[in-house]
Image: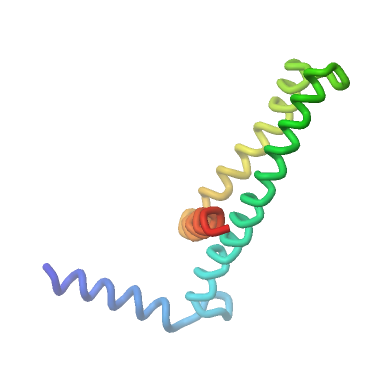
Length: 113
């Protein structure tokens, strides 16, 4: 049984290190989503800090009456843009092998920033 697993691993490593997909080595195709995930995770982490500060300022301004928050308006925005966000999420998961590299890169970039 151990020989079968080693043989399968040899086949996977042979595929990764040789051949080409669209003229590019397979390892490059696998690394690109990971690097993109790293960059996006880093940027989301930085933007999240800014978004939290902006949300606190918005709540304080709304509390003092300079700006009004309407739950109906927020619901309208969620109804408009929610399905689009879900569609992009499904598209990402549709490319699961590439999506996994993107997700791993995103988590690492988010944590290490």
